[in-house]
Amino acid sequence: MTAGAGTCRAKTAQQRRAAGIILVAASVGILAIGTALAGGYRINLTPSEPLGLWRIVPLGRPVAGNDLVFICPPATVEMREARARGYLRSGSCPGGVAPLIKTVIAVAGQHVEIGASVSVEGRVVSSSSLASRDGSDRPLAPSASGIVPPGYVFLHSAFPGSYDSRYFGPVPASGVLGLAQEVLTYAP
Image (cartoon, rainbow, N blue to C red; front, side):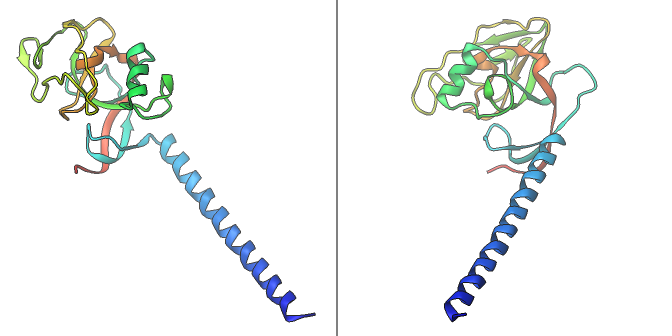
């Protein structure tokens, strides 16, 4: 046996150990991600709410005003356009988008007025001014004013660049996954 053959076997054994360690680490990572998703944990990477780890808490009652919720947007023309423009991330909701984290500011039967800003039942919603163009200088059209229909909610985020019901209108309350609870977050 030559010294070269012994060195080659030692490298092969080291490579097998390294591959085994990588395989175990990848398996643990996949298991952790699967467990987190099954447990209702999500990572928010958008500035509409603080960045970081959030949890979806089951909502054992009808959605109400001021609830901060995770919601799957409906698979509509507006949402497909929003996805094409890069406003929505990929995820498990209809249309292949990620759930949104938004505050419910109006529920069925409430009047929403959309002008320079948003008013609900005649009260101006803070941080609700509308933009005429997005960050890439593309035009943004406001949603129509009106009464929130039965089974729908009107969503808002105080982040100035948020894409919310100001632009896409009320969405079905059936898309609410639960309350959004911060776990480990930070606001940049």
